Length: 60
Image (cartoon, rainbow, N blue to C red; front, side, top):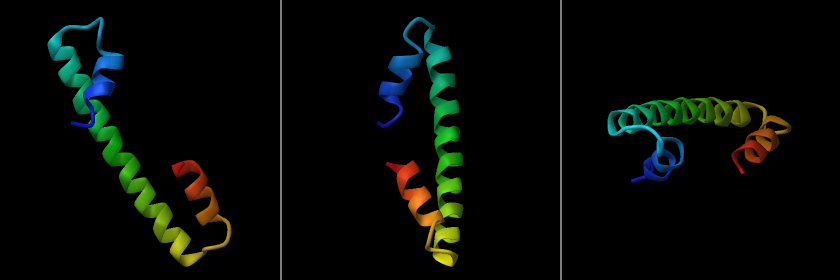
């Protein structure tokens, strides 16, 4: 699974339910980043000059 290394990195000193809460928060944050990247890709579709370069640079 994807959130497992993040849960290990951030939730090592916490207990198991705290690791579960960290996994839920990180998955919701990943969904927010995914939706913002969708918005940026649509903006790049409309204006492919500068916003596309910013989206690709922030993606990498």
